[in-house]
Image (cartoon, rainbow, N blue to C red; front, side, top):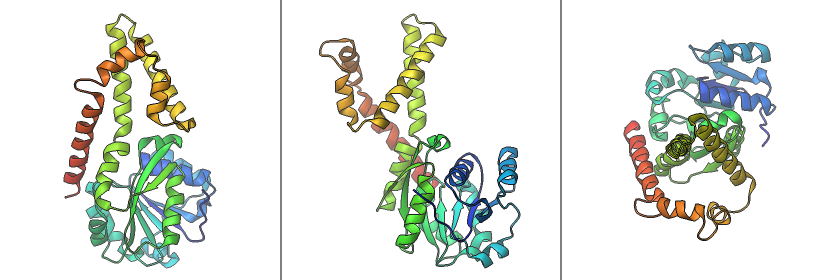
Length: 275
């Protein structure tokens, strides 16, 4: 999705996720001179990228306010928001969209810290954004216009897919599934490799088999129009080895039930962080 900008785009915080978004925007055709970064602890890599591409690094808040940014993307940790957001209050205007990727912090709290009256999108991307394969759940408050929502969609889609949630209360569920989800998949690889070692495989071989299997299956999911259940059935011969393993994973303390418990714990922790 093309990102069509005539006014500046401000990135507040250029850590791992902020840096991934920045790279996606620049690769997507955003003019570097329209991007301004505000981060007192800028990494050497991002500083070098900014210098090489011509991204603004030292633009003052007053100068940015005069330029009326199209969007301000907040990519700092939730605990830093009370210190960072009040300084951004001069940027609040009907024509400026604020996009926050801080876990747990609700749109009303963000608006309060910005001094009120802000058009806010609360978003939760995940770490595969760093390779252009992320997915982001987003919620827009009532002040966000349709054009601003399209802009947010384009900004988020620069690093993968984007989906919208109408009920902000469900954003903690988004965090529990897709935000934290990559860690679940990485742990699955660890568990599969450990199982291989228990069956006598050398550790390195078991890990190579597990990594390639999970990444390959993920690519099949990405490319196929079939749902996950159908793909599972397609590789499961009745009475075969896969069926024997699935009898364990899907029976007793089933993997589905365990995942529900894990997601519930993540959702509840997200709610605690937002208080």
